[in-house]
Length: 183
Image 1 (cartoon, rainbow, N blue to C red):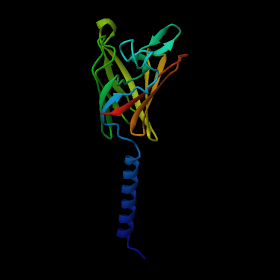
Image 2: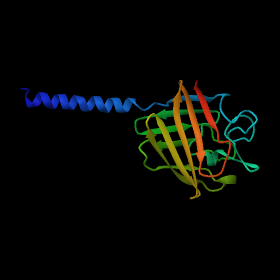
Image 3: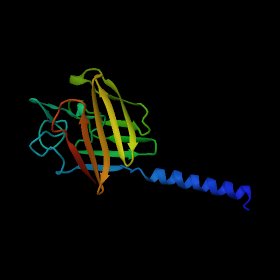
Image 4: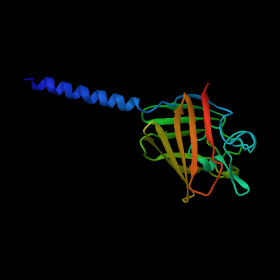
């Protein structure tokens, strides 16, 4: 018969192993990431924040959906991600129009992540709330825009590459899947 302290130590050890394996089951996206040519849409589509080249412009009936509607975060052509167990910070150059914020901080537990982006045409900054939550080894980030449009981005590591897929609750085609390699 085992003593109670031994049983307690075994139980505590099992809990610690369970916590460690849970923490290891989610990927760490930390690093500097560079957009690859294999991203969609291809070179004939629009580049993030510019309207030309490779990138994130999604086609709608005659216009395009810009990065500001594609989600809470945008790496554009290059970004640096710093991830802890609680948060993810995405740093990139802001675009000339001030639509894409230079720094975005996301809470990884699904709670409100309050960020701000410059207003259109140099107007007052616009507050927004995003939610980031793990679904297995994928980070799902949602953001409501204007109360009606909901954007979703899923981040995953595939073959050591950061993959960001976009979706939106509108009838939009050509939403991008962006693939980044670590610098």
